[in-house]
Image (cartoon, rainbow, N blue to C red):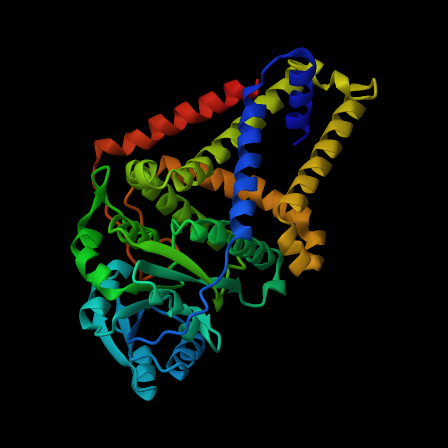
Length: 439
């Protein structure tokens, strides 16, 4: 933020154009677009009833948590609940389903996509509700979730999602912060346009007919020559949009989910999401450019921003070490001693970045004011974990890797694929360009 303001000042005073400043202006413009759109968001209020099939793929969830998940679903009286156990036999989960009078099926083939296929084949309801096995519903989740389907043009609906007991650790607080950013900014903004680009998989409702028509493609479609198990929710959202339906957010339908408390597990989760999100953006980009240009701009910026920021840090580190471009900081009253000047710059940069985050995501801190004290930690997690993971996820998009956070989940395949180099070439070009524009 400090470098951006200094570059804008130099731009206005001397006419020198900085590409990094132009990019940051675009980021702030997109933030204003999100804010403006989100202010026009209203959840659907029309009461509507229909038949619903709740499908829950599960691998090896702890029994106490899974019992709570199923009990809360059953309490809301969907037309049917179908649990699909995939991977090794799990007699404990089978017995739990029998105890709750929940229908279950088992497939020895691991993988969420195959489990969803089996669930959709068994389902009879007009609306198929896909639920992650660690997602806990609230009292009115289902009733509120189906309301937008009163509009025949709506094909998919997602819920408001929060983290269970976020005060457990810095990591859970950070995860809750990210979820609230989506709840308050991204989801409402995209919902106003009828193009929520990813209906998060913790709890999603689709017209079952869409899933039936999409299933062959869902199970076999490849990206750069490989089948990728990750990002099933984003893929099904893509198919719904391509079929001509709207995808929307229903803020009155609330669910809770767990978040990793271990840094290694969190990194694996974010890596899987980074790969899935970015490969789906590239695969969906031609359609978005033709039919949803604002959505395309949001997702392109999500890919480019981590590369720009990582490249900027590299460029600035070199500048500090060599003294190159130090004239930019002559606008500041810096101490004469080099070490004091550097300390001054680092502290000021940190303060400006924290102020920027506080301004952009003020809704969350109004909701959880105590999280303001954790803002420096959030910034460090974003900088040292999230951004590098996003960049690495782009490079490794075409690797058919395992699920990552489930020991008995999809294991991936090891096959030679020359197209695996494509993301590396594109990513290297973006990284090199980001270093150059920050100079």
